[in-house]
Image 1: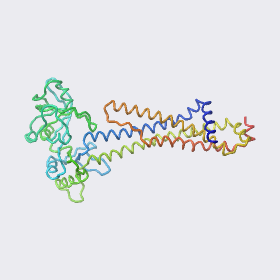
Image 2: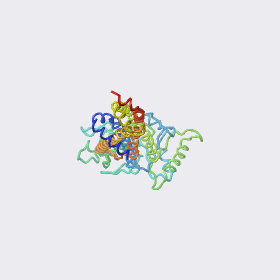
Image 3: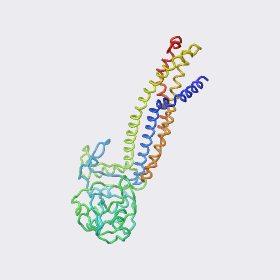
Image 4: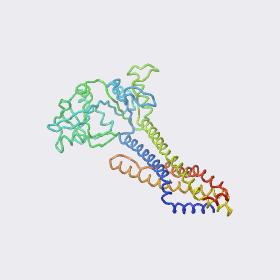
Length: 411
């Protein structure tokens, strides 16, 4: 078949002009490699988010103060302090929503935790006794905060594993006194080592009773967040709606009026995060794809030079009976071979770099999946051929229209 002959001639031309051929396909190599890397990194980032949420708990419903559009983030995510959520809201949800297995409010602060001459900067978090059930955390030593600790405003504390190690090393911390913002707290427990969840180090925290944190440490009466755990098999969407009804009654919100809170379940959060990462991934891939257009223009210029250099050869072929179709096909095949080889090389480089990124992320402790994705394979296979056909057509057409007599006399 003629196509086989054309491919062999194209490969021979590449062999003769190795450096020029490589420089010609370099833009394709870079463009395809960039697309593969971006899509793979996007898939890895998606897997990281999903794995983090699943590790944290996929059956949680969060309530945040302040409202937002369904398509936008809550106001509190922009750094604005909203005080609409109270302890009584969590209590009302616990009493009135059967689908809630456990619930707790959260308040947070950062400061220096000290014991003797040892100091460590850590996050202190005020939580209810249900915290350990909501987040499925475990105690390594002692016990967790109780409802009595909270109601009596006791100054007791449970240490995260990292804080415990930094302050006490291998010493027994139970019963020891530490200081938080110049106030003395008695250590009653140590959490098991948990690592990072939802992009937050869970081991550099200390936990104190919610009411103690509000009244004695922070001087506030609101909570920053309420998080609830659903009973097994509970539909999270319907649970979120039940919680909304209770909170609207609690806050005396009239029908049709805007909520002063937002309820988000982990399934919805995953959908939103997935959509955001998809948009970013495909946008960046499209930007990288622009380099393919630039490289296509470069390939067209090189092929025009090739036609000029081979004018006498074209004239000879025509004189021996080659049809315009044959010459057009020859130069088109040559262009597609160049772009296809560039696409294959770019794909291999992209796969290798994406693998290296995944290995690095995993070595750093992130739940990062290595996933090239079917889309990158399809794009790496189709784009180089399309670039070759589109940008190789004009040089091929010009070669096919050369007149034999003029071509044979070309110097």
